[in-house]
Length: 141
Image (cartoon, rainbow, N blue to C red; front, side, top):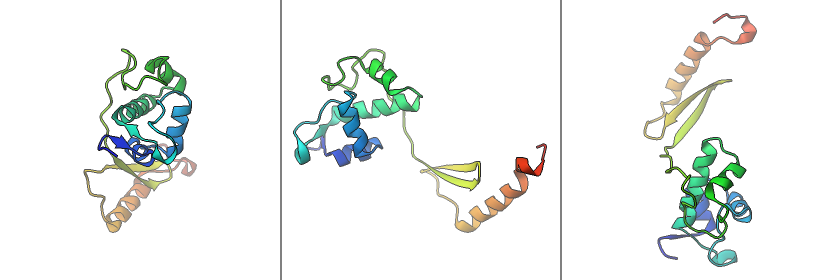
């Protein structure tokens, strides 16, 4: 396997989707078929770029039908990531960890930041419990 070839597991991990999603996108013509069959099937850089583009569209709230239209009718056979002039440049990505502090209240922490210790998080939960009232308590604010 060359550096620009990926197994289905690798492309799924790089794209942040399941292997089942990859297969579904191929079946629906959103992604071109892999090179080869079965365990020998390989995906290339074009597949990965197109997969990331599909994810960008979905993160913008577009349906798969809208994604299909934006990518152009020849999506199943065109292996270039930019099948249509209407396709925007990919959105930059970053990883975040979501921590539920209380029901309906969460803290999002960038992977660039260290998550506080359990003791500090417990202090934060206590503070939030005091300052965020629940509707059932009859609070006006």
